Length: 411
Image (tube, rainbow, N blue to C red; front, side, top):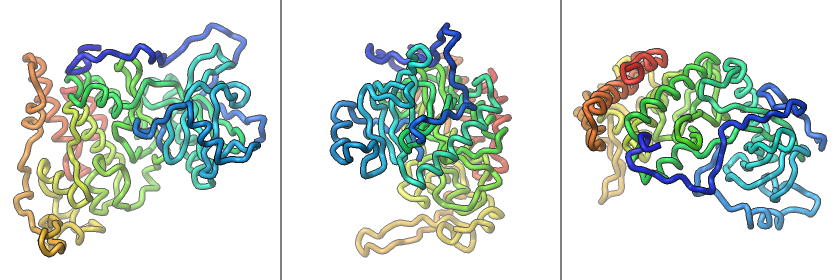
């Protein structure tokens, strides 16, 4: 554990989460990724929500229960109303509330049909839009599982899906927390270079699997990467926003802003290379404990991007749908500011951003202490990897296969 963080962190004694539980009973059916179980009731996309949205089990059920009829299991907002000890599908006993997001409630349960192993059930809100989105996520997860039957490619595994009291439910293996929570637990000091190397390889394997499925994940960030109890194994989750490459449409808002690739912001058609960019931002944040690009708007984000990576090639700017929002007729970036006196928006040409004015090695070194010679070597390699992952031209950005063969990963 100590080698994976820059300071020693004591794991909470009351958190016992087993990534896998082997049960010897042979007469009980284990759930498979391809199973779709129909409940006998006839019956977005945060798999694990931000800790700020987490609520204690006690009180939540009574709060929700007050908004529904006695015979209803859905509140006025479409969320499933749960109580400790409730049974889902006469099989999954509710233990506690894992959290609640925009699209769903996430519950920790015991699988009474398989040795009382602990699992997680994501219960989608009873809403037509949410239901259709949930169905899409189920299909995405099944495709991933079909390409990775042994579950070795670091994408979260759907064990089953079913309907219960008019709610779509998805069953997942349990993990300890997401990487946003891990960074908070570490006090935002970041992880060790050894941990970054291990996690980077695992994320690249996940991206390679997505590429084999012709997927663009579309929302890679620390919140959507889960880690096991020992902090050694991570899995990419939340495939509700994933789309097939052929279905990509120009939009300035795909992906959470801090992790959004620049080609998306200026209105170019994107592909799986946008996920490479997002993973790069995650790796930097995991090592330093700090967000790399923290702009308040797309224009502000592009300024941060160019400080480290320079401008786009002019040929790309000419094709960009939203170029007039960010560039002048000479393809020089226009930084948008608000005049403090007149309150009018100003567009300031930034010719100094035609080439980078910052570098990753210096930024990483500022967050590094007590590295031995090998650690210093790995830091140089990480800086080189990030520089190549952040090429403003997505066609020249490292591809996932090249990332896996980069010295930072291989050596």
